[in-house]
Length: 239
Image (cartoon, rainbow, N blue to C red; front, side):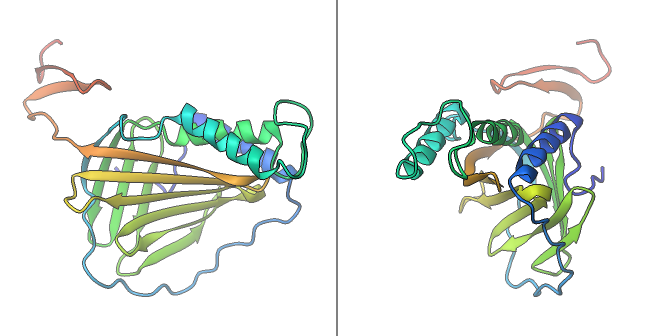
């Protein structure tokens, strides 16, 4: 299947709209459109990300714990500016707006919750299908990166050495960057997501790890579960 770049689900689109509205209130300067520049040509051998990937929850960031550390970092950053604390109340400086921080957290959690990835990679293109949500696609051909404008903003995707990057800049100062990198033996995939908002001074970064898994035999219809167990039946028979 062919998916447009950052084809958002309705649920995620609502989260994007809400967060952009929050960010737009903190920024009166519209983002400039991406310029169509000629990217340098690719050099060297590219890593092959293709395959089926399942999230390793033990190695991946626990979102609640990571968010608690994130809030603590923001509090420490602004301790010198105010003694009023973080909980509730109006905005304290540029980075202590509780509504903006909580909105950024909900949006980031939605972006990074995917338990399964299905990646198709060919010469000059890659499609990353994320379970129950949007897919990422990059048609880089023989170029190091490609950039364009779409209905949501300006996006850029391509290669940073052996890492695959996707970046989307939305209106109101909201930016999303996904970085995909493989372990030396290609058995483990790291996905690091960085979400930046003009209304929150500190970006939120989540790191998840995925392991390869093989699909069941074609003559069986199997349902994969989050516990790595499967329920299978022969194709064409009742489960």
